[in-house]
Image (cartoon, rainbow, N blue to C red; front, side):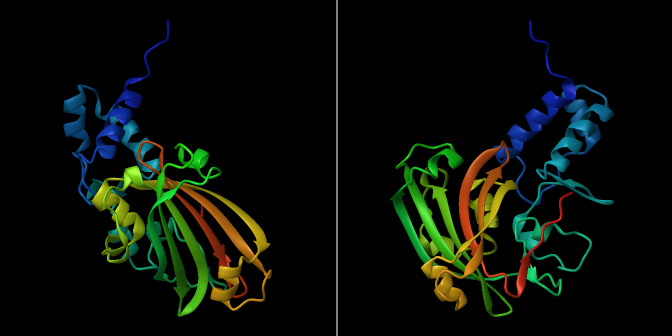
Length: 248
């Protein structure tokens, strides 16, 4: 007979399911630990361990003296970039070699809905090959200089009704759009990095000779509940910029 999981893990799973279902919208506080303890009929320490797990997984964030909140991707992106809270750069890692951390300027180059999922992408997203997809291509600039060309693949079933106007006209970041319009709060990414010859589109965007080396970043973004919601292929020009990521 399999033993039941410890109570703190059951509470964590219950809270994670509530977050995934949108019971607590972005930017709102979680009920106090005392209220959660009363709700689950347990000690505050048991609740605290469950909440600690969700904070460690970035599904929740603690604000000193204010409580525990559901992260708001757009609000985090507006934080001072040299401040103590580095959450604005959890998912953007290209910076100038002098170490300055600057937000990117994004230009939408292409958007198409209904493309069949390429066979090699399907396993990364846990969907069937040729399932309907949304495709977008963005050019990212820092200080006016093109530094990254991104291709995004999104399962259309997870983003019903998303069109070019909604994507391009979003009020905030791409991950903020996923969170607030569709309920997919990205909390982690898996990335693979490799130096490759620049594809033609990247060479043109970066004013490079065809085949010049660039950094390729293959990213899968996961929402609460460990659900893959986006595959992104980025090519970055690292002549004057670098990839920087702090693991915590």
